[in-house]
Length: 105
Image 1 (cartoon, rainbow, N blue to C red):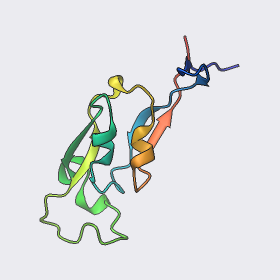
Image 2: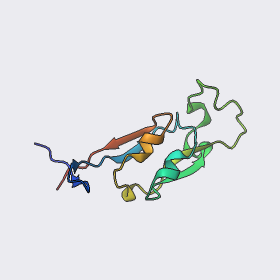
Image 3: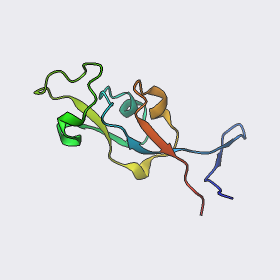
Image 4: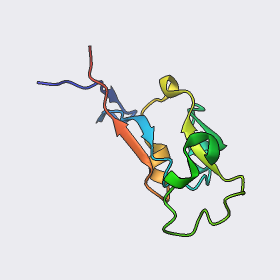
């Protein structure tokens, strides 16, 4: 049986943190909502040209019409600082985040 790291809320309920493991930069619009809500400075905005090749970005919504723009996307800069609160996922309008539970030792 796999056991995950768990904690207890102030109210006494058991809670299992889900740590951020990936951001889908192909669909990220660089809005910065996750950056603003993260209490641990896990994220950083980078230029999309530094993240992936411009051809790899999903443009179904016309978000990236100008190839010469300086659009930004989010990246994980301090993954080890993540506390597993999933606040980033809750505010993301594009559902870009992947989280995983940590197996306890």
